[in-house]
Length: 511
Image (cartoon, rainbow, N blue to C red):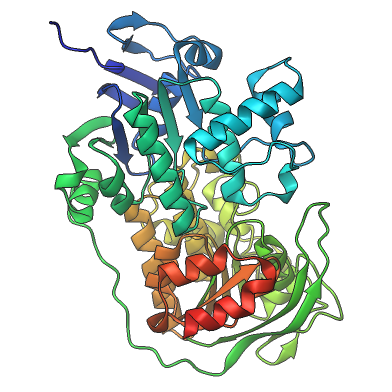
């Protein structure tokens, strides 16, 4: 009897973008029922490879085989007809529509919604994905929204499911549920390609891994037989540098928020209710929470994007609730936004121009006139100091990998020497090397006496970085708990709690 061919086999895949070789003779094989990890640093070629598999882009050379037969995947429709489904890192859902309506749009279905809803319930029950087809998306948590994307794929009965950073916005409890679903799917014969920077998850879930580095296959392994450190070394081609944490003694409060209540500007935003927090100089305060619980509204209020004379916000004891972003920056506030391109940087601007976005001051524009030499010196310093991989200060923002663009933005804000730094998801979607560099920069800034507020859905990040952690749920902030007195499970339960349970859960986490 001949052996069963791989579900997917890639041979000699090459893809160029101008002078950049994104994929260089890549080979990848995924067996039926296998959960296979695809690992690599930002810019290693993972996204390009998956776009080729899903028919978004065509390879310049190489062959794709499906169940042992050569195929050409012209577009995502062709991929779906073969049985390939993909859940992207960024969801594509309409807030004002119901779950069933969103799935119908994604499938291009003309079936009556009642019949589709019944099938959604059946598939959801089979795989333990609790979703109500009649609920509107704007009422759902991020974990529930992800279930919609997965259900949309499952309704097409996929034979290969691709997941890109699927746990980046999930609580630990939701991650366990996702893993149980994927293991059941694999047991039924569906193959899974799993992309993640969370190496302990890879070790727990996957039975095979392909590691890309600089567009080429650097290693193949069984991650269960590796350590997180050895996997990281395969990715970066050397030893992983660990963060060092200097002893710190927190100083006086540098940012105080007193009973802040603020209605959202967006139709489906979250109302902030009685937010109270105190950030001290030399301290890192972590704010955990599932996305959509008021993080964006809180950061907008703190950064000055939402201003109100009634807002009780003080920097170094001086009220700033009525001040806008520029005035708050002048008083020592810096902000790393969640969106790299669009808010943190502009894709079509050079790095020199992007450096200037938040650094137009007496050093770059003495006497009100822009000093091109000072701007070039600033951008050059940021690239060198924070290890940004780019083709010089003239490189456009869009030409950088996500991790390198993030290092540049983080470096630009830290280099300003702020008294208070707001950091939204500082290492979201970046590889381990970039994450370590960003974490070290934040720790060094806190050691220099700055107060840092980090908003993140990554509990491992907060537990390794913060001195104290509070949880934002339903627009309410729990009392902060010292990291040494809590753990991922307690914080995860608080993240997934109902808004009315926040105080009770916080007390339990601290107990």
